[in-house]
Amino acid sequence: MAELALLSDEPATEHLLRRVWPYLRPHRRVVGVALALSFADAATLVAIAPIIGTATDALTRGDRHGLAVAAVALLLVVLGQTWLARSSELRLILAGERIVRELREQVVDGLGRAPLRFLEAHRTGVLLRRATGEVADLAAFVRSSLPDLLTAVITGVFTLVLLLIYSPLLTAALVVLFLPPAVLLMRSFRNAAGPAFGGQAAAEATVAGTFAETLGAGETLRATGGLGRWSRRFDRENAAVVAAARRVVVVESRVAGILIIEGLALAALLALGGWLVAEDRVGVGTVVVFILAGRTLFETFDQASRLVGDAEDARTGLARLLDLLAATGPAAATDPAPIELPRRGELRADGLTYHYVAGVEVLHRIEAAFPAGDRAGLVGATGSGKTTLVKLLTGLYTPDGGTVRYAGVDLRTLAPATLRRHIVLVPQEVHVVAGTLADNLALVPGGAPRAEIERAVTALGLTDWVDEQPGGLDTDLGARGERLSAGERQLIGLVRAALVDPAVLVLDEATAHLDEATAARLETALAELRADRTLIVVAHRPSTVARLPRLVRLHAGAIQNEGTEVRTDVQRAPATS
Image 1 (cartoon, one colour):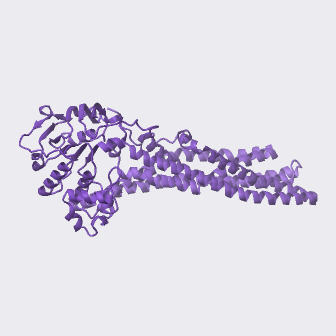
Image 2 (spheres, rainbow, N blue to C red):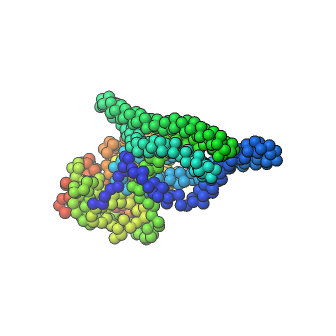
Image 3 (cartoon, one colour):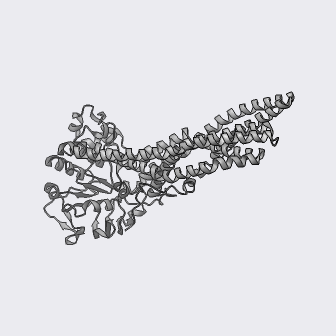
């Protein structure tokens, strides 16, 4: 069987820049401009210290002209640095927002084309957390922390270069006193940060998944008395989130040791500078430059250390987003070549096999044919493989072996839009979105004008049901259709089926929540509405089975009696165009 890509709870954060580069490449120009402005901003900020040092030397020499020139230069540099700081920040934010927006669109597109098996294998809350929460966290980092972090890093590098130019001896002293303990401290943080931040993100995703399931199963939990046990599970998962957050706080607190290292290094630098001035080995201006630039270096390092937690959080979130994008696969470079298909045609399964778990086959070389205009029932005991088979027949699953063809064309070669125009599945659980009844009925390929909706409602004999709603077709159904019963949801699915004209219509227990009389009336109306199309019905209800002229029986993943049982006691509706 084809290996199903699954998300990792704690995806690797190594080589992140290389992995994200394909998403950065289209924006390299705007990113380049933003980086250039950031470098210019850092250069002007670092230039302030030597200008003040030059002014100090001019003052000690009594050089008024030199002091005036230094003052004017300082004013121009400060003004330029102010403009550059603002411009680089805005450019960097805009560049980051573009990249995050593209990542968000890629995530939505990836989830939209992801195989149904992938969506079924993951909790809704986990996917929701990655597709929304972590994208939002990354966007917040880009807006608030990334400009400051980048400026701090560039400024720190420029400052070290400046200090080395002014006095290699003082620079060496600063490097020896400050960098080794600071690097050790940051390495300790880095080693612990990956597991800590990754564990926190995984724990939060678990809670999000449980919370989403709680909302969907709230009525069932109350009715069965399982709310207490579910709440205890939620409490355990929430406690795991708190414990993970505490580990993150402990790891982040290690960075606070930088302040102690800075203080000791600055005190030593002052003492050494004073001794060098007394020995007439450097000028007072040089020491002033070192004190100011050293302070700038410490401030930038301190700023970077405060932001490193945010950066690690964003790094973890980006790794989880890239994991999702990798699992859902890259967008196809081109859509499949358009194929002209007949309006009606045979649906055929040849040698179908399927696995949910490697080594455990749930369908065994299924052979079945459904000619154009066929009316067939797919029957069998619970667990016999009916729902799996209809998902294969409708192209929602890809078979591990064998093929499904419509009019002789393999479904895998069809563009999704073409496939959905010709083969439609109406499931037992009909999904309803926030909006009006008309909005939900129009959720069919290409949409549906109001006049067509009204004609479909009339054809199915549901006018009275629509009129009983407070606002008719304009009735607000509430969040997730909470104002509808399970049977009314299925009515929406059946009206949607009446609004489309696929070659093959598959009803998977689509009337299970309706009373027998209503189900019979709607199934008959739906069949007669397009009597020349193929209708495949998955059903347990005897009355539904009794209305079908041909049965395909499944048992333990295999077709019994060579796949057909023709019934002569059922009258077919006359074909109409």
